[in-house]
Length: 182
Length: 255
Image (cartoon, rainbow over the protein chains, first blue to last red):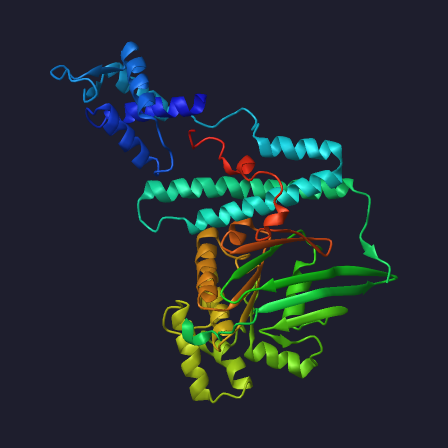
């Protein structure tokens, strides 16, 4: 996934800015500082390091040739790259294309009733997910962990608010007023 | 909060085929249509749905503020369907606590007096009412002194006073109508954590909200539409498509 690659790449540069480190340590530090929910394959770290080396952004620390434990350092070019990345705006301009959106929109094109049925099921699942996520919130005070959990919750909440809007829309498209006749 | 909550093995709230209709000029609106729901003690249930979905009607029925057109309602095992006005008032004094969005504190009474007034109406001595009231205010984290008037308190503190008023006597059922609606999100979270504690101590808590963040504090979320329950996060059968579809956050988690 492109976004994930970009984040690991700059994650490695940001960690090396704080001092030389080797592949496995970089993997562990990256996971810890992004809230412990993001697992990175150590192979991905090594291949990213090799690529960064090829671009001249990192270099092996001279006096240590030992393969896996080989420490890497940031080059001046790498320092420029990480500074530029932090200055860049990271808001995705592309519209979201995840499965939930596509499913609801396609259901709406079948019929408003079909959309409502899909909305009800997805909403129940999202609420269950959100509840489990909130219950699983680590009690600790590691800001990275707390903020990552908030990020995940905020996305679920945004999806739920969007489902409410979808429901409003689907309901205006149905033509069956629910007035009783008693 | 153990001392304040009446423990019971019966469900805190049961609705059995409850229908409520309202006359609206020449037409009759069915606000709630044969709804059945059971809320366990020691749990929080959130009711969501658009305006007109029936969620507020359900709350008013549970508080015996209105009576069902048909069906049965039980609070802690006790049938409240046919209560007269006096019986309903007694139910709200003794068994069912209610928290409103706009606190509904009496501005000419101090924080403590707002909590003790209903206790005195319920026949407690002034001394006993003050002891219960002080304990309740302390428990929900209203800072001293407790003889301040509502307009000297922040919104979050006023809502805490309102929760203390609702919990000053043991409750088996606590009903909250958009309890964080007038609060900023950090203060709203604190109020919700307080209600989570109330549930953890053994009461059934029902929260009406349109806010997913508020609902996320509940053990269970029930959504209403046109007087029907259309989804229930506790009903496994309702989830027919894979949860994994919506489980994966778009960006932050790599495979």
